[in-house]
Amino acid sequence: MGTARSGSRRNPRHWVEFTGDRPPSTLSLLFWVAVAANSVALLRFADVSLTPGYPSPSTWAIALSQAGGLVLAGVLWPFLPWASTASRPRKGLTLLFLPAIMLVILTGGGAAVFMLFCLAVGNTILVFGSRSAIAYTAVTATLAVALFSSGPRADPWTGLFEGALLATLGLAMIKFFLSLLEARQRAEETRGLLADLEAAHAELRRYAERTRELTVAEERARMAREMHDSVGHYLTVINMGLANALRFRTARPDAAWDEVADAQRLTQEALADTRRWVRALKPLRLEGRAGPEAMRALAESFSGIGPQVVFGIDGAWPDTDEETELVCYRVLQEGITNALRHSAADRIEIDVTCTADRITVVVSDNGQGADDQAATHGFGLRELRERVEAVGGTMDAARRAGVGFAVRASVPARRASTPVGSDTGARVAGARS
Image (cartoon, rainbow, N blue to C red):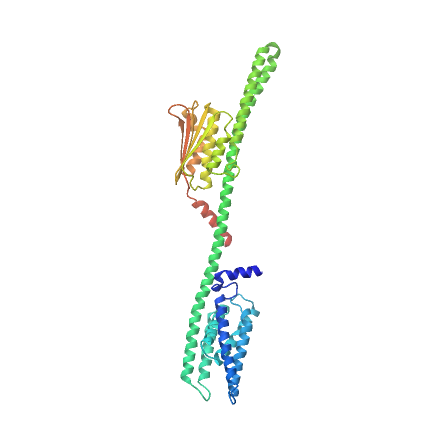
């Protein structure tokens, strides 16, 4: 508790902002300055009262009334509510505070008295509303006029002046505290909107993360199916070869051993193919890396299983969203996998070119290439082209002019995220309503 209070005091906003139903420190400072000024005036009166024959009993009664009003107001001030949502017992404290201040006003004088009046009007408008504040101002001004206009030393003009001054101050304070109340409401609304914005931003990040994870899972599932088909084909051929070897083992032993040798060769090819698929099935973020680091790690993970893999990047990696980053990674993944499976190349080159608003990924090899039909209608490349176009990019896959095959994709660094943001904002708005 002590730490919280000290932190609040160090925050300069507590001088001008309401904290719950507590007033700004500036108002408390003004109140106690006014009480101190009136107390000094009463002490001076007490000193003068030591003169024989002075003051009269009526003057003593006025001074004691003012002192009583100051004491009651000082006791009530720390507990006064400053919001219309306060409980009834606490609002009752305001009903005691207002006549105490009125008593000080009618029995005292000077600028300090008017400061207390302004604070009383402000407390009234925040707790009971503007109509109650207007009524309090009218009653106080009327009593001031009546007080100065009656008695043996009546001074109607002074009474009118005091009443007009109180009315003017009261109306000015009503306007001021209404503006203060509106500012407080706007500040609360702003804090609420900021909290909603932070919640929407967090939800958007969770949505983007889920989308990325689902996309990676879909890619891995597709590649797992292709891996199943590839390995299944190898196992089928191996099984047939071993069955033939079993049949030929007596009548044609040489043919049987040929079948066994073929089965061994196919087993090695299946094992190498399985290892390539396992490398390709690695997730997007490798050991906490992303962007060019993840792409470089993916390229290096294929080293040592066949052809030489060379990775190069030109330019600084721009600020990208998750989907764009995933597409770049997917282009690299598919390009290397296709080269390893089909090209019989001994060198695979990856060139990544980055500008402020665009990323280009080129995967090329020096192998035997592929026919145009496979480059255009192959399932993996066709799906990859759709993925690239979905983020506003373009992709080409074709034979190189000399030898080999190349996959080239160019995507914008960031794509419009209006649909996602709008959807998230709509869900947040719906949750609030």
